[in-house]
Image (cartoon, rainbow, N blue to C red):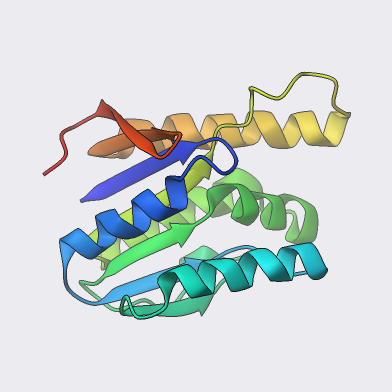
Length: 169
């Protein structure tokens, strides 16, 4: 099953996605895409690690080139998150959304269940520079493409899941 989980900052989307993957059973892998640079980023990484502790997730740090990630065949993968992966691809290696789509497709071919967490970023205004707007529109295109492909699309608002496509089991 392919699930896309979207929501704003601190909406509860990560916690919901983790619980969703736990309900699926089987071997679980957490693919961390946020490169921890700086104290604030490191604090976020540590917070997420504490939240996952004892839940049976193996962690793979993968900042770019998702298609080459070594994942357990037939396992359950949680990719956290699409926005960080896209930013790394666009601004670090110039791979962009095509590289991200190829990576997600590789996961879908290999894994029993793939859950991707992404951000809803168009609620915060419109006064951005050219590079930021290019990133935002690229993420929007990725969200639309993955939503079309996913069997389940859930928007999390205030910790509450709103099913946009498919059905919760």
